[in-house]
Length: 286
Ligand SMILES: [Zn+2]
Image 1 (cartoon, rainbow, N blue to C red):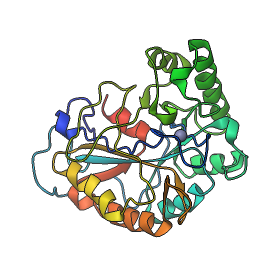
Image 2 (image 1 turned 45 degrees about the horizontal axis):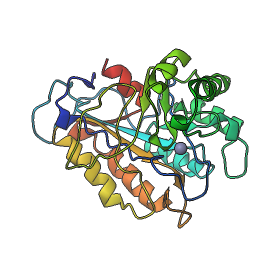
Image 3 (image 1 turned 30 degrees about the vertical axis):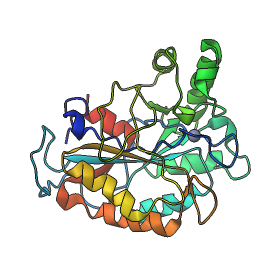
Image 4 (image 1 turned 45 degrees about the vertical axis):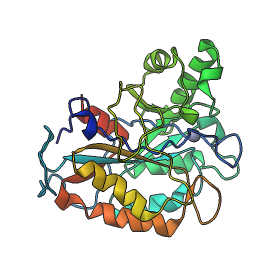
């Protein structure tokens, strides 16, 4: 079941993680979400484990049958609307990664600490997104370290210690990856610039690129196209969501769109497509 994260050809490494935080969310400053890789967090899954599935076509590019294409669903900023997604994920048997800014938990519109614990107990990964959703490239290394390390420590009190991080707004500087590693992370999601037609390889585990963030106008058909484009080559597709609600802001997805997509995605197993947490995808590629 190892998807060769690093060994797949560039075209296979379509990391369609929407740039969740590439641009500041409309709702103001603080939408953030960390991604963390709860180690070994068992994930909810629709069906039995490990069934190799027929492929849609094409060569396997080194990945094992059944895990030829891995889809990573990430939800940024610890928004209360994401509980709607959690209910859908449970119904469809899919795991996800929630990137949470710990200092914002419990604020209006945000998840509570108890809700984060419940998400982890459901098998989802809780990842780091800095304490305050800081734009790290504007901070001194010392401030960055506090934002990254203290956030990770706080989240470790709620869930398995996070192993993956999402940079708020996708921004990092030359010091950030080293600091993240020193804080205990094994990988981080950047953002930006990918399209299904122009995938590129990750340049490193601390610079995982993404597709444009899912926004209010993103259709279920567009989401499906990110996956089917990746299925042509195999590899990892990371999608980034923020709020889950109807007509509630640029960085949101309507519940019916998300549910439509998740139902379709859960049925892609016959095509060799599996949904994994970000940490699971990273580990499988090592
Ligand atoms: Zn964010």
